[in-house]
Image (cartoon, rainbow, N blue to C red):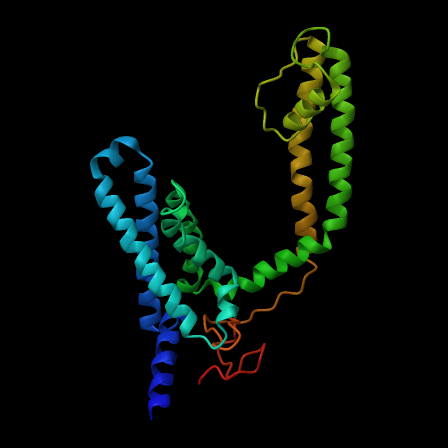
Length: 276
């Protein structure tokens, strides 16, 4: 009876913490997001000298309260899964740890509490609340398209690099005697890259009419070059077969895998029952 009771509370706690399809799970994630946002705001305000001088004690204690809450949540996530290491070394597990430990490190390393800005990463949990997991398939298609087009993109980038070297060398020959900042070929190549990508820092600028004419051509060329990688990836994405798979936020308590189908009864990864 004791083992069954122990099992039941762990299962219920697991459903609240890891699922967003139930009212309790959604409420938990919403509260968690509010606390995360509040914590980030506290850190931002603490960096404002005038505000920190006036409300330092409030911000300090508020941050410790948030840290304690996150610590309890971190421990709860560990004890409600059958294989804690799966969570601890998962992406969210590492993010949760990095967002909790800075305040404790402040005892040993001065200023480390500012690292709590890592908590912004935890806002990624909003995808679970909004049930955007159903769009994971689209992101997978995008990643697959990137992999399929990597050879074409590599050739394109090589061409752009060679073009920048040539244009930089030409600009060095044209502008080097005018004292306009083109003092070496590497510096001129840097200017060509900045101009071709339409960034335009303005730290180096051509002074001669010929140099300005060449710069104008490079700027116009930049708009066309920037669009090429987008076209390559878009072309590959049209070749990818898209599947509409309805998934939910249910997480396997044994292996921590998610993205299960709505009607799934067993984990697709380890075969463990999802309705334990």
